[in-house]
Image (tube, rainbow, N blue to C red):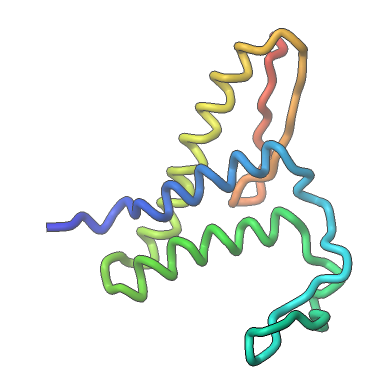
Length: 127
């Protein structure tokens, strides 16, 4: 028997993406985005309606969904709700680890990142 929830891919994906959000400016735009050509052998400029608004956070969120959804749903192992909530589980685990690790650094810092649900999480070693 294999449990439907949580999905391993979703949990790990949610955790890894949250750590990436900690290190990168999630509001940064992708300049000159590209997409693969139909034969997959080269890249061409991406001209979709959202070409000028692609952000790091948006692309990371899509990546997390694709990792979890693509593995579990198409394989018939998980439900959509399993993949969505597993991303949140991974995010919560990563935020806990980041907050614990923040206490071990001497140099004061505060980092804010945008969670999957659009709210802001703060990681800081300030008292």
